[in-house]
Length: 344
Length: 250
Image (cartoon, rainbow over all chains, first blue to last red; front, side, top):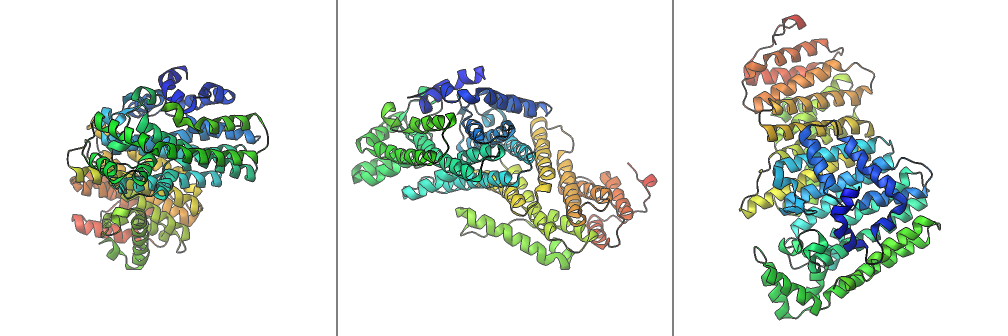
Protein backbone atom coordinates (compact mmCIF):
# COMPACT_ATOMS: atom_id res chain seq x y z
CA UNK A 1 0.00 0.00 0.00
CA UNK A 2 2.72 2.41 1.00
CA UNK A 3 4.65 1.59 -2.14
CA UNK A 4 1.60 2.09 -4.32
CA UNK A 5 0.77 5.45 -2.79
CA UNK A 6 4.29 6.70 -3.22
CA UNK A 7 4.10 5.92 -6.91
CA UNK A 8 0.72 7.43 -7.59
CA UNK A 9 0.70 10.35 -5.19
CA UNK A 10 1.19 12.96 -7.90
CA UNK A 11 -1.86 11.79 -9.73
CA UNK A 12 -3.85 11.47 -6.54
CA UNK A 13 -3.09 15.04 -5.59
CA UNK A 14 -3.99 16.26 -9.02
CA UNK A 15 -7.46 14.81 -9.25
CA UNK A 16 -8.66 14.80 -5.74
CA UNK A 17 -6.66 17.03 -3.49
CA UNK A 18 -7.03 20.71 -4.17
CA UNK A 19 -9.19 20.63 -1.07
CA UNK A 20 -8.42 17.36 0.65
CA UNK A 21 -5.88 14.54 0.45
CA UNK A 22 -7.01 11.07 -0.59
CA UNK A 23 -5.64 9.56 2.63
CA UNK A 24 -8.05 11.70 4.61
CA UNK A 25 -10.89 10.94 2.25
CA UNK A 26 -10.48 7.17 2.51
CA UNK A 27 -9.34 7.01 6.11
CA UNK A 28 -12.36 4.93 7.15
CA UNK A 29 -11.61 2.22 4.63
CA UNK A 30 -7.81 2.35 4.49
CA UNK A 31 -7.43 -1.09 6.02
CA UNK A 32 -9.96 -2.69 3.69
CA UNK A 33 -8.29 -1.05 0.70
CA UNK A 34 -5.08 -2.74 1.73
CA UNK A 35 -7.01 -6.00 1.96
CA UNK A 36 -8.17 -5.54 -1.62
CA UNK A 37 -4.54 -5.49 -2.78
CA UNK A 38 -3.71 -8.47 -0.58
CA UNK A 39 -6.72 -10.34 -1.91
CA UNK A 40 -5.68 -9.70 -5.50
CA UNK A 41 -2.08 -10.68 -4.78
CA UNK A 42 -3.26 -13.88 -3.14
CA UNK A 43 -5.80 -14.70 -5.81
CA UNK A 44 -3.20 -15.14 -8.51
CA UNK A 45 -0.47 -16.68 -6.38
CA UNK A 46 -0.97 -20.17 -7.80
CA UNK A 47 -1.13 -19.02 -11.41
CA UNK A 48 1.52 -19.55 -14.04
CA UNK A 49 4.55 -17.33 -13.39
CA UNK A 50 4.02 -15.37 -16.58
CA UNK A 51 0.50 -14.41 -15.61
CA UNK A 52 1.28 -13.90 -11.94
CA UNK A 53 4.31 -11.69 -12.58
CA UNK A 54 2.55 -9.54 -15.14
CA UNK A 55 -0.38 -9.12 -12.83
CA UNK A 56 1.81 -8.15 -9.88
CA UNK A 57 3.62 -5.70 -12.14
CA UNK A 58 0.29 -4.07 -12.95
CA UNK A 59 -0.85 -4.10 -9.35
CA UNK A 60 2.35 -2.52 -8.09
CA UNK A 61 2.31 0.11 -10.80
CA UNK A 62 -0.07 2.06 -8.63
CA UNK A 63 -3.47 3.44 -9.32
CA UNK A 64 -5.84 5.18 -7.02
CA UNK A 65 -8.14 2.19 -6.41
CA UNK A 66 -11.01 4.63 -6.65
CA UNK A 67 -13.58 2.06 -7.74
CA UNK A 68 -12.83 -0.41 -4.92
CA UNK A 69 -12.81 2.53 -2.51
CA UNK A 70 -16.24 3.62 -3.71
CA UNK A 71 -17.57 0.08 -3.28
CA UNK A 72 -16.11 -0.16 0.23
CA UNK A 73 -17.52 3.21 1.24
CA UNK A 74 -20.96 2.31 -0.13
CA UNK A 75 -20.86 -0.97 1.78
CA UNK A 76 -21.09 1.04 5.02
CA UNK A 77 -24.77 1.56 4.25
CA UNK A 78 -25.48 -2.11 4.99
CA UNK A 79 -24.78 -4.46 7.88
CA UNK A 80 -23.04 -7.33 6.16
CA UNK A 81 -19.27 -7.68 5.84
CA UNK A 82 -17.35 -9.19 2.96
CA UNK A 83 -17.11 -6.43 0.41
CA UNK A 84 -13.38 -6.89 -0.26
CA UNK A 85 -13.75 -9.57 -2.99
CA UNK A 86 -16.33 -7.57 -4.96
CA UNK A 87 -14.15 -4.46 -4.67
CA UNK A 88 -11.23 -6.53 -5.98
CA UNK A 89 -13.30 -7.86 -8.88
CA UNK A 90 -14.30 -4.33 -9.86
CA UNK A 91 -10.67 -3.25 -9.83
CA UNK A 92 -9.85 -6.26 -12.03
CA UNK A 93 -12.48 -5.23 -14.59
CA UNK A 94 -11.04 -1.72 -14.56
CA UNK A 95 -7.51 -3.09 -15.02
CA UNK A 96 -8.68 -5.21 -17.97
CA UNK A 97 -10.10 -2.11 -19.65
CA UNK A 98 -6.79 -0.29 -19.14
CA UNK A 99 -4.72 -3.19 -20.51
CA UNK A 100 -6.84 -3.40 -23.66
CA UNK A 101 -7.04 0.40 -24.03
CA UNK A 102 -3.27 0.62 -23.96
CA UNK A 103 -3.05 -1.79 -26.90
CA UNK A 104 -5.75 0.12 -28.79
CA UNK A 105 -4.16 3.52 -28.12
CA UNK A 106 -0.63 2.12 -28.60
CA UNK A 107 0.22 3.81 -25.28
CA UNK A 108 3.79 3.32 -24.10
CA UNK A 109 3.35 4.37 -20.50
CA UNK A 110 0.78 3.73 -17.83
CA UNK A 111 1.24 5.22 -14.38
CA UNK A 112 4.78 6.11 -15.38
CA UNK A 113 5.78 2.54 -16.26
CA UNK A 114 6.00 0.74 -19.62
CA UNK A 115 2.69 -0.81 -20.57
CA UNK A 116 2.23 -4.58 -20.79
CA UNK A 117 1.98 -4.59 -24.57
CA UNK A 118 5.31 -2.74 -24.81
CA UNK A 119 6.90 -5.38 -22.59
CA UNK A 120 5.18 -8.52 -23.88
CA UNK A 121 3.32 -7.73 -27.08
CA UNK A 122 -0.26 -7.12 -28.15
CA UNK A 123 -1.40 -10.73 -28.05
CA UNK A 124 -0.11 -11.32 -24.56
CA UNK A 125 -1.85 -8.17 -23.32
CA UNK A 126 -5.17 -9.06 -24.85
CA UNK A 127 -5.07 -12.67 -23.61
CA UNK A 128 -4.04 -11.46 -20.15
CA UNK A 129 -6.99 -9.07 -20.13
CA UNK A 130 -9.39 -11.85 -21.11
CA UNK A 131 -7.90 -14.12 -18.46
CA UNK A 132 -8.33 -11.48 -15.75
CA UNK A 133 -11.87 -10.69 -16.87
CA UNK A 134 -12.81 -14.37 -16.52
CA UNK A 135 -11.29 -14.37 -13.03
CA UNK A 136 -13.32 -11.30 -12.08
CA UNK A 137 -16.48 -13.14 -13.09
CA UNK A 138 -15.46 -16.12 -10.97
CA UNK A 139 -14.99 -13.85 -7.93
CA UNK A 140 -18.39 -12.23 -8.43
CA UNK A 141 -20.00 -15.65 -8.85
CA UNK A 142 -18.96 -16.58 -5.33
CA UNK A 143 -21.53 -14.14 -3.96
CA UNK A 144 -24.37 -16.01 -5.68
CA UNK A 145 -26.26 -12.74 -6.06
CA UNK A 146 -27.86 -12.61 -9.52
CA UNK A 147 -28.53 -8.87 -9.23
CA UNK A 148 -24.85 -8.19 -8.57
CA UNK A 149 -23.77 -10.34 -11.53
CA UNK A 150 -26.34 -8.65 -13.76
CA UNK A 151 -25.06 -5.20 -12.84
CA UNK A 152 -21.44 -6.09 -13.59
CA UNK A 153 -22.46 -7.81 -16.83
CA UNK A 154 -24.34 -4.72 -17.93
CA UNK A 155 -21.49 -2.41 -16.92
CA UNK A 156 -18.86 -4.43 -18.79
CA UNK A 157 -20.95 -4.52 -21.96
CA UNK A 158 -21.63 -0.80 -21.79
CA UNK A 159 -17.92 -0.09 -21.33
CA UNK A 160 -17.21 -1.96 -24.57
CA UNK A 161 -19.97 -0.06 -26.34
CA UNK A 162 -18.49 3.23 -25.13
CA UNK A 163 -15.05 2.29 -26.46
CA UNK A 164 -16.50 1.22 -29.80
CA UNK A 165 -18.45 4.47 -30.01
CA UNK A 166 -15.26 6.40 -29.33
CA UNK A 167 -13.28 4.51 -31.94
CA UNK A 168 -15.95 4.98 -34.57
CA UNK A 169 -15.87 8.75 -34.02
CA UNK A 170 -12.09 9.17 -34.07
CA UNK A 171 -11.03 12.22 -36.12
CA UNK A 172 -14.65 13.23 -36.57
CA UNK A 173 -15.22 16.95 -35.92
CA UNK A 174 -18.98 16.66 -36.17
CA UNK A 175 -19.71 15.63 -32.62
CA UNK A 176 -22.37 16.91 -30.32
CA UNK A 177 -22.22 17.31 -26.56
CA UNK A 178 -24.95 14.70 -26.40
CA UNK A 179 -22.72 12.17 -28.23
CA UNK A 180 -19.89 12.95 -25.88
CA UNK A 181 -21.98 12.52 -22.74
CA UNK A 182 -23.43 9.29 -24.10
CA UNK A 183 -19.91 7.98 -24.71
CA UNK A 184 -18.37 8.93 -21.35
CA UNK A 185 -21.36 7.56 -19.51
CA UNK A 186 -20.71 4.15 -21.03
CA UNK A 187 -16.94 4.36 -20.97
CA UNK A 188 -16.48 5.56 -17.40
CA UNK A 189 -19.58 6.45 -15.41
CA UNK A 190 -21.28 3.06 -15.72
CA UNK A 191 -18.51 1.21 -13.85
CA UNK A 192 -18.23 3.90 -11.19
CA UNK A 193 -22.00 3.79 -10.69
CA UNK A 194 -21.78 0.00 -10.49
CA UNK A 195 -19.02 0.23 -7.85
CA UNK A 196 -21.32 2.13 -5.50
CA UNK A 197 -24.26 -0.17 -6.19
CA UNK A 198 -22.17 -3.32 -5.76
CA UNK A 199 -20.83 -2.25 -2.38
CA UNK A 200 -24.30 -1.40 -1.17
CA UNK A 201 -25.84 -4.60 -2.56
CA UNK A 202 -23.25 -6.92 -1.04
CA UNK A 203 -23.62 -5.30 2.35
CA UNK A 204 -27.39 -5.79 2.24
CA UNK A 205 -28.33 -2.10 2.02
CA UNK A 206 -31.95 -1.16 1.33
CA UNK A 207 -32.92 -1.04 -2.39
CA UNK A 208 -33.70 2.71 -2.26
CA UNK A 209 -30.22 3.35 -0.84
CA UNK A 210 -28.62 1.17 -3.54
CA UNK A 211 -30.45 3.25 -6.12
CA UNK A 212 -29.47 6.61 -4.56
CA UNK A 213 -25.85 5.58 -4.31
CA UNK A 214 -25.97 4.43 -7.92
CA UNK A 215 -27.32 7.81 -9.03
CA UNK A 216 -24.67 9.58 -6.99
CA UNK A 217 -22.03 7.32 -8.57
CA UNK A 218 -23.27 8.08 -12.07
CA UNK A 219 -22.91 11.84 -11.51
CA UNK A 220 -19.50 11.47 -9.89
CA UNK A 221 -18.40 9.25 -12.78
CA UNK A 222 -19.46 11.88 -15.32
CA UNK A 223 -17.74 14.67 -13.35
CA UNK A 224 -14.63 12.51 -13.03
CA UNK A 225 -14.35 11.83 -16.77
CA UNK A 226 -14.96 15.43 -17.85
CA UNK A 227 -12.35 16.59 -15.31
CA UNK A 228 -9.94 14.01 -16.69
CA UNK A 229 -10.59 15.30 -20.20
CA UNK A 230 -9.96 18.89 -19.10
CA UNK A 231 -6.71 17.78 -17.50
CA UNK A 232 -5.70 15.94 -20.65
CA UNK A 233 -5.84 19.30 -22.45
CA UNK A 234 -4.32 21.43 -19.72
CA UNK A 235 -2.13 19.71 -17.16
CA UNK A 236 1.54 18.90 -17.54
CA UNK A 237 2.86 15.35 -17.53
CA UNK A 238 4.54 15.63 -14.12
CA UNK A 239 1.24 16.54 -12.52
CA UNK A 240 -0.85 14.07 -14.43
CA UNK A 241 1.48 11.04 -14.26
CA UNK A 242 0.68 10.02 -17.83
CA UNK A 243 1.14 11.32 -21.34
CA UNK A 244 -0.73 14.60 -21.77
CA UNK A 245 -2.76 15.31 -24.89
CA UNK A 246 -3.29 11.61 -25.57
CA UNK A 247 -6.86 12.18 -26.69
CA UNK A 248 -5.90 15.04 -28.99
CA UNK A 249 -3.10 12.93 -30.49
CA UNK A 250 -5.48 10.05 -31.09
CA UNK A 251 -8.07 12.30 -32.71
CA UNK A 252 -10.58 11.86 -29.89
CA UNK A 253 -12.78 14.89 -29.41
CA UNK A 254 -13.48 15.60 -25.76
CA UNK A 255 -15.78 18.20 -24.24
CA UNK A 256 -13.32 21.16 -24.25
CA UNK A 257 -12.73 20.68 -27.98
CA UNK A 258 -16.42 20.18 -28.74
CA UNK A 259 -17.15 23.48 -26.97
CA UNK A 260 -14.26 25.07 -28.81
CA UNK A 261 -15.73 24.15 -32.19
CA UNK A 262 -19.03 25.68 -31.08
CA UNK A 263 -17.49 28.90 -29.72
CA UNK A 264 -14.51 29.69 -31.94
CA UNK A 265 -14.49 31.66 -35.18
CA UNK A 266 -13.84 29.99 -38.53
CA UNK A 267 -10.13 30.88 -38.65
CA UNK A 268 -9.41 29.39 -35.24
CA UNK A 269 -11.59 26.37 -35.99
CA UNK A 270 -9.77 25.63 -39.23
CA UNK A 271 -6.43 26.07 -37.55
CA UNK A 272 -7.29 23.44 -34.92
CA UNK A 273 -8.86 21.11 -37.48
CA UNK A 274 -5.66 21.24 -39.52
CA UNK A 275 -3.59 20.34 -36.50
CA UNK A 276 -5.90 17.52 -35.42
CA UNK A 277 -5.92 16.02 -38.92
CA UNK A 278 -2.17 15.43 -38.78
CA UNK A 279 -0.64 12.03 -38.15
CA UNK A 280 1.15 13.25 -35.06
CA UNK A 281 0.95 16.52 -33.18
CA UNK A 282 3.99 18.39 -31.91
CA UNK A 283 4.28 20.02 -28.49
CA UNK A 284 4.07 23.46 -30.06
CA UNK A 285 0.87 22.54 -31.82
CA UNK A 286 -0.56 21.18 -28.57
CA UNK A 287 0.29 24.50 -26.93
CA UNK A 288 -1.54 26.38 -29.68
CA UNK A 289 -4.64 24.27 -29.03
CA UNK A 290 -4.28 24.82 -25.30
CA UNK A 291 -4.13 28.61 -25.75
CA UNK A 292 -7.13 28.62 -28.04
CA UNK A 293 -9.11 26.56 -25.55
CA UNK A 294 -8.36 29.16 -22.89
CA UNK A 295 -9.15 32.08 -25.21
CA UNK A 296 -12.54 30.74 -26.21
CA UNK A 297 -13.45 29.84 -22.63
CA UNK A 298 -14.09 26.25 -23.71
CA UNK A 299 -12.55 25.09 -20.46
CA UNK A 300 -14.85 27.24 -18.35
CA UNK A 301 -17.84 25.79 -20.15
CA UNK A 302 -16.53 22.28 -19.59
CA UNK A 303 -16.02 23.03 -15.92
CA UNK A 304 -19.58 24.33 -15.73
CA UNK A 305 -20.72 20.94 -16.96
CA UNK A 306 -18.65 19.27 -14.22
CA UNK A 307 -20.24 21.56 -11.67
CA UNK A 308 -23.70 20.59 -12.85
CA UNK A 309 -22.90 16.93 -12.27
CA UNK A 310 -21.44 17.73 -8.86
CA UNK A 311 -24.66 19.49 -7.88
CA UNK A 312 -26.73 16.56 -9.11
CA UNK A 313 -24.54 14.20 -7.08
CA UNK A 314 -24.97 16.34 -3.99
CA UNK A 315 -28.73 16.34 -4.47
CA UNK A 316 -28.70 12.54 -4.34
CA UNK A 317 -26.71 12.69 -1.13
CA UNK A 318 -29.35 14.87 0.49
CA UNK A 319 -31.73 11.93 0.34
CA UNK A 320 -29.32 9.55 2.12
CA UNK A 321 -29.33 9.03 5.89
CA UNK A 322 -26.82 11.19 7.75
CA UNK A 323 -23.57 9.49 8.70
CA UNK A 324 -19.82 9.86 8.49
CA UNK A 325 -19.61 8.28 5.03
CA UNK A 326 -22.06 10.81 3.66
CA UNK A 327 -19.60 13.54 4.61
CA UNK A 328 -16.87 11.70 2.70
CA UNK A 329 -19.14 11.45 -0.34
CA UNK A 330 -19.80 15.18 -0.11
CA UNK A 331 -16.06 15.87 -0.01
CA UNK A 332 -15.50 13.65 -3.04
CA UNK A 333 -18.11 15.59 -5.00
CA UNK A 334 -16.74 18.94 -3.85
CA UNK A 335 -13.26 17.98 -5.02
CA UNK A 336 -14.46 18.32 -8.62
CA UNK A 337 -16.27 21.63 -8.16
CA UNK A 338 -14.51 24.50 -9.97
CA UNK A 339 -11.45 22.31 -10.03
CA UNK A 340 -10.02 23.51 -13.33
CA UNK A 341 -9.49 27.05 -12.04
CA UNK A 342 -6.87 25.67 -9.69
CA UNK A 343 -5.07 23.88 -12.52
CA UNK A 344 -5.15 26.82 -14.93
CA UNK B 1 -21.22 -28.37 -44.15
CA UNK B 2 -22.19 -28.13 -40.48
CA UNK B 3 -25.67 -26.88 -41.19
CA UNK B 4 -26.29 -29.67 -43.67
CA UNK B 5 -24.96 -32.32 -41.33
CA UNK B 6 -28.18 -32.42 -39.33
CA UNK B 7 -31.11 -30.81 -41.12
CA UNK B 8 -33.32 -31.02 -38.05
CA UNK B 9 -30.94 -28.77 -36.10
CA UNK B 10 -30.42 -26.34 -38.97
CA UNK B 11 -33.16 -23.87 -37.94
CA UNK B 12 -31.65 -23.57 -34.47
CA UNK B 13 -28.18 -22.99 -35.87
CA UNK B 14 -29.44 -20.38 -38.31
CA UNK B 15 -31.24 -18.64 -35.50
CA UNK B 16 -28.06 -18.55 -33.43
CA UNK B 17 -26.09 -17.12 -36.34
CA UNK B 18 -28.74 -14.48 -36.99
CA UNK B 19 -28.73 -13.37 -33.36
CA UNK B 20 -24.96 -12.93 -33.28
CA UNK B 21 -25.07 -11.01 -36.58
CA UNK B 22 -27.81 -8.77 -35.34
CA UNK B 23 -26.02 -8.08 -32.08
CA UNK B 24 -22.79 -7.14 -33.81
CA UNK B 25 -24.40 -5.03 -36.49
CA UNK B 26 -26.47 -3.09 -34.02
CA UNK B 27 -23.46 -2.33 -31.86
CA UNK B 28 -20.66 -1.69 -34.27
CA UNK B 29 -21.18 1.29 -36.53
CA UNK B 30 -18.44 0.19 -38.92
CA UNK B 31 -20.31 -3.03 -39.68
CA UNK B 32 -23.64 -1.42 -40.46
CA UNK B 33 -23.11 -1.04 -44.17
CA UNK B 34 -20.99 -4.12 -44.62
CA UNK B 35 -21.78 -7.73 -45.10
CA UNK B 36 -20.74 -9.44 -41.92
CA UNK B 37 -19.29 -12.87 -42.37
CA UNK B 38 -18.71 -15.08 -39.39
CA UNK B 39 -17.16 -18.35 -40.47
CA UNK B 40 -19.26 -21.52 -40.36
CA UNK B 41 -16.61 -23.09 -38.15
CA UNK B 42 -18.05 -21.10 -35.25
CA UNK B 43 -21.20 -23.22 -35.45
CA UNK B 44 -19.23 -26.28 -34.43
CA UNK B 45 -19.52 -25.68 -30.69
CA UNK B 46 -23.24 -24.78 -30.75
CA UNK B 47 -23.80 -27.94 -32.79
CA UNK B 48 -22.00 -30.09 -30.21
CA UNK B 49 -23.91 -28.41 -27.42
CA UNK B 50 -27.29 -29.05 -29.05
CA UNK B 51 -26.45 -32.62 -30.08
CA UNK B 52 -25.37 -33.46 -26.55
CA UNK B 53 -28.64 -32.15 -25.17
CA UNK B 54 -30.68 -34.00 -27.78
CA UNK B 55 -28.90 -37.19 -26.84
CA UNK B 56 -30.37 -36.81 -23.37
CA UNK B 57 -33.74 -35.22 -23.99
CA UNK B 58 -35.60 -33.40 -26.72
CA UNK B 59 -36.74 -30.36 -24.76
CA UNK B 60 -34.00 -27.84 -24.32
CA UNK B 61 -34.71 -24.12 -24.01
CA UNK B 62 -31.67 -23.55 -21.82
CA UNK B 63 -29.50 -25.48 -24.24
CA UNK B 64 -30.25 -23.08 -27.06
CA UNK B 65 -29.20 -20.14 -24.91
CA UNK B 66 -26.05 -22.01 -24.04
CA UNK B 67 -25.40 -22.85 -27.70
CA UNK B 68 -25.71 -19.13 -28.48
CA UNK B 69 -23.08 -18.45 -25.83
CA UNK B 70 -20.73 -20.99 -27.41
CA UNK B 71 -21.15 -19.27 -30.77
CA UNK B 72 -20.16 -15.93 -29.21
CA UNK B 73 -17.28 -17.57 -27.39
CA UNK B 74 -15.92 -19.23 -30.50
CA UNK B 75 -15.94 -15.99 -32.48
CA UNK B 76 -14.56 -13.83 -29.64
CA UNK B 77 -11.70 -16.24 -29.08
CA UNK B 78 -10.82 -16.30 -32.76
CA UNK B 79 -10.82 -12.47 -32.93
CA UNK B 80 -8.42 -12.18 -30.02
CA UNK B 81 -6.17 -14.95 -31.29
CA UNK B 82 -5.80 -13.41 -34.71
CA UNK B 83 -4.23 -10.13 -33.55
CA UNK B 84 -0.79 -9.10 -34.76
CA UNK B 85 1.76 -9.06 -31.97
CA UNK B 86 3.17 -5.69 -32.96
CA UNK B 87 1.48 -2.63 -34.43
CA UNK B 88 2.61 -1.79 -37.93
CA UNK B 89 2.52 1.44 -39.89
CA UNK B 90 -0.52 0.47 -41.91
CA UNK B 91 -3.44 2.53 -40.63
CA UNK B 92 -6.07 0.11 -41.94
CA UNK B 93 -4.39 -2.86 -40.27
CA UNK B 94 -4.22 -0.99 -36.99
CA UNK B 95 -7.86 0.04 -37.21
CA UNK B 96 -8.85 -3.56 -37.92
CA UNK B 97 -6.86 -4.65 -34.90
CA UNK B 98 -8.60 -2.10 -32.69
CA UNK B 99 -12.00 -3.26 -33.88
CA UNK B 100 -11.05 -6.91 -33.37
CA UNK B 101 -10.03 -6.25 -29.77
CA UNK B 102 -13.16 -4.28 -28.99
CA UNK B 103 -15.48 -6.68 -30.81
CA UNK B 104 -13.95 -9.60 -28.93
CA UNK B 105 -14.40 -7.72 -25.65
CA UNK B 106 -17.97 -6.91 -26.54
CA UNK B 107 -18.70 -10.56 -27.30
CA UNK B 108 -17.14 -11.74 -24.04
CA UNK B 109 -19.19 -9.25 -22.07
CA UNK B 110 -22.27 -10.29 -24.06
CA UNK B 111 -21.62 -13.88 -22.93
CA UNK B 112 -21.67 -12.71 -19.35
CA UNK B 113 -24.74 -10.60 -19.96
CA UNK B 114 -26.60 -13.54 -21.56
CA UNK B 115 -25.71 -15.81 -18.66
CA UNK B 116 -27.33 -13.34 -16.26
CA UNK B 117 -30.26 -12.47 -18.51
CA UNK B 118 -31.29 -16.07 -19.20
CA UNK B 119 -30.84 -17.34 -15.65
CA UNK B 120 -27.82 -19.48 -16.48
CA UNK B 121 -25.81 -18.53 -13.39
CA UNK B 122 -24.98 -22.16 -12.69
CA UNK B 123 -22.91 -22.11 -15.90
CA UNK B 124 -20.98 -18.97 -14.99
CA UNK B 125 -18.22 -20.76 -13.09
CA UNK B 126 -17.57 -23.50 -15.69
CA UNK B 127 -17.61 -20.93 -18.49
CA UNK B 128 -15.31 -18.48 -16.72
CA UNK B 129 -12.96 -21.37 -15.94
CA UNK B 130 -13.04 -22.39 -19.60
CA UNK B 131 -12.25 -18.84 -20.76
CA UNK B 132 -9.38 -18.42 -18.34
CA UNK B 133 -7.89 -21.83 -19.21
CA UNK B 134 -8.14 -21.05 -22.91
CA UNK B 135 -6.32 -17.75 -22.57
CA UNK B 136 -3.76 -19.25 -20.23
CA UNK B 137 -2.95 -21.75 -22.99
CA UNK B 138 -2.62 -18.96 -25.54
CA UNK B 139 -0.38 -16.93 -23.25
CA UNK B 140 1.92 -19.89 -22.65
CA UNK B 141 2.08 -20.71 -26.31
CA UNK B 142 2.74 -17.12 -27.40
CA UNK B 143 5.38 -16.62 -24.76
CA UNK B 144 7.24 -19.91 -24.77
CA UNK B 145 6.41 -21.24 -28.20
CA UNK B 146 7.45 -24.69 -27.11
CA UNK B 147 4.35 -25.29 -25.06
CA UNK B 148 3.41 -28.43 -26.83
CA UNK B 149 0.01 -28.73 -28.46
CA UNK B 150 -1.58 -25.63 -26.99
CA UNK B 151 -3.97 -25.31 -29.92
CA UNK B 152 -5.06 -28.91 -29.60
CA UNK B 153 -5.55 -28.37 -25.88
CA UNK B 154 -7.75 -25.35 -26.57
CA UNK B 155 -9.88 -27.33 -29.03
CA UNK B 156 -10.15 -30.19 -26.53
CA UNK B 157 -11.29 -27.81 -23.77
CA UNK B 158 -13.89 -26.28 -26.03
CA UNK B 159 -15.20 -29.63 -27.27
CA UNK B 160 -15.36 -31.04 -23.78
CA UNK B 161 -17.20 -28.01 -22.39
CA UNK B 162 -19.70 -27.75 -25.25
CA UNK B 163 -20.63 -31.44 -24.96
CA UNK B 164 -20.69 -31.58 -21.20
CA UNK B 165 -22.58 -28.34 -20.57
CA UNK B 166 -25.01 -29.05 -23.42
CA UNK B 167 -25.83 -32.45 -21.95
CA UNK B 168 -25.99 -31.02 -18.45
CA UNK B 169 -28.50 -28.39 -19.55
CA UNK B 170 -30.84 -31.13 -20.71
CA UNK B 171 -30.24 -33.63 -17.92
CA UNK B 172 -30.11 -31.11 -15.06
CA UNK B 173 -27.69 -33.36 -13.30
CA UNK B 174 -29.78 -36.52 -13.43
CA UNK B 175 -27.52 -38.48 -15.78
CA UNK B 176 -23.93 -39.59 -15.63
CA UNK B 177 -22.24 -37.44 -18.20
CA UNK B 178 -18.63 -38.58 -17.99
CA UNK B 179 -18.79 -40.42 -21.32
CA UNK B 180 -20.23 -37.36 -23.11
CA UNK B 181 -17.55 -35.18 -21.57
CA UNK B 182 -14.78 -37.51 -22.74
CA UNK B 183 -16.39 -37.83 -26.13
CA UNK B 184 -16.30 -34.03 -26.49
CA UNK B 185 -12.72 -33.84 -25.25
CA UNK B 186 -11.41 -36.33 -27.80
CA UNK B 187 -13.55 -34.94 -30.59
CA UNK B 188 -12.01 -31.54 -29.78
CA UNK B 189 -8.53 -33.05 -30.05
CA UNK B 190 -9.39 -34.47 -33.47
CA UNK B 191 -10.86 -31.18 -34.66
CA UNK B 192 -7.80 -29.34 -33.40
CA UNK B 193 -5.43 -31.75 -35.11
CA UNK B 194 -7.33 -31.37 -38.36
CA UNK B 195 -7.53 -27.59 -38.29
CA UNK B 196 -3.91 -27.10 -37.32
CA UNK B 197 -2.74 -29.36 -40.12
CA UNK B 198 -1.49 -32.16 -37.90
CA UNK B 199 -1.45 -35.75 -39.04
CA UNK B 200 -4.71 -37.27 -37.83
CA UNK B 201 -3.04 -40.67 -37.60
CA UNK B 202 -0.99 -39.35 -34.66
CA UNK B 203 -4.22 -38.79 -32.80
CA UNK B 204 -5.80 -42.11 -33.63
CA UNK B 205 -6.31 -42.95 -29.96
CA UNK B 206 -8.70 -39.99 -29.69
CA UNK B 207 -10.64 -41.41 -32.63
CA UNK B 208 -10.88 -44.70 -30.77
CA UNK B 209 -11.84 -42.94 -27.53
CA UNK B 210 -14.65 -41.12 -29.29
CA UNK B 211 -16.20 -44.39 -30.44
CA UNK B 212 -15.50 -46.08 -27.15
CA UNK B 213 -17.28 -43.31 -25.23
CA UNK B 214 -20.15 -43.48 -27.63
CA UNK B 215 -20.55 -47.16 -26.77
CA UNK B 216 -20.43 -46.25 -23.09
CA UNK B 217 -23.22 -43.69 -23.32
CA UNK B 218 -26.25 -44.86 -21.34
CA UNK B 219 -28.76 -43.26 -23.66
CA UNK B 220 -31.01 -44.62 -26.37
CA UNK B 221 -30.45 -41.96 -29.01
CA UNK B 222 -26.83 -41.69 -30.06
CA UNK B 223 -27.38 -41.01 -33.70
CA UNK B 224 -26.33 -37.34 -33.60
CA UNK B 225 -22.92 -38.26 -32.28
CA UNK B 226 -22.67 -41.10 -34.78
CA UNK B 227 -23.44 -38.73 -37.64
CA UNK B 228 -20.66 -36.41 -36.49
CA UNK B 229 -18.10 -39.21 -36.26
CA UNK B 230 -19.12 -40.78 -39.56
CA UNK B 231 -18.89 -37.41 -41.30
CA UNK B 232 -15.46 -36.68 -39.85
CA UNK B 233 -14.28 -40.21 -40.60
CA UNK B 234 -15.30 -39.81 -44.25
CA UNK B 235 -13.52 -36.45 -44.44
CA UNK B 236 -10.35 -37.77 -42.84
CA UNK B 237 -10.59 -41.16 -44.54
CA UNK B 238 -10.53 -43.20 -41.37
CA UNK B 239 -12.96 -45.97 -40.59
CA UNK B 240 -14.92 -46.78 -37.49
CA UNK B 241 -12.57 -48.75 -35.25
CA UNK B 242 -13.34 -51.87 -33.33
CA UNK B 243 -12.97 -50.65 -29.78
CA UNK B 244 -12.79 -51.83 -26.25
CA UNK B 245 -10.85 -49.79 -23.70
CA UNK B 246 -8.04 -52.40 -23.79
CA UNK B 247 -7.47 -52.10 -27.50
CA UNK B 248 -7.07 -48.30 -27.62
CA UNK B 249 -3.59 -47.56 -28.90
CA UNK B 250 -2.01 -44.67 -27.02
